Image (cartoon, rainbow over all chains, first blue to last red; front, side, top):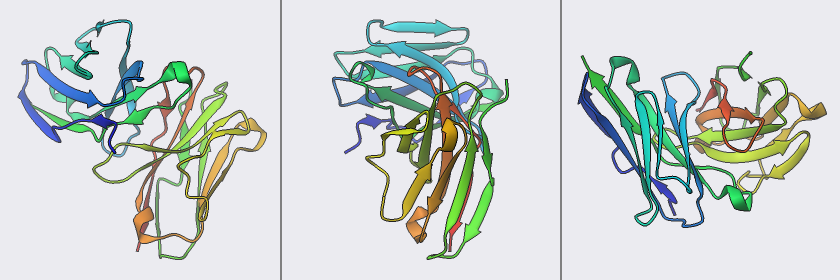
Length: 113
Length: 112
């Protein structure tokens, strides 16, 4: 039973345009969410987080939106750059209940020059 | 600040052999995690340590996997005997708080 889903295995975007990566979850107890970026042969790198008390968090070119009623979050990258080409993982946790993070399967983003 | 170190980076073994992975977390990070990432999937938590005590090992296949964290710093993960389905990247992560984790580069294991 996949608690965290990333239904798009891959996404291609033109350089300079917006990239939107989506993540859906099933567990309504999840209250903290992370996005990680992973390059080949490297470990995942933390990108941005959001708590369930917020619906938006922004860090430079990266913005995460959370829609609790839809159990959906999205990562927006504006403008996209070729260096953003990587696999992006969404992770969710019921931190208030001391639970660990559950990761989605990832979306491979390709930013075309 | 040095990142999470893991070795070896790559390992190829035959089924039924044993293998061990080593992890050195970021200095001062009390919590250490071992994840298994199978191709095309997200990382799956195998075991979590807080200092040298186990916090969560509910998804660790205890009949063949074992892990220890001596003195609350370095950790080793062992598989004995290995099966074909153990082929994966084994990631170590450490954290100071519950809000984010820092990952090492991983060990890619191939079981033939």
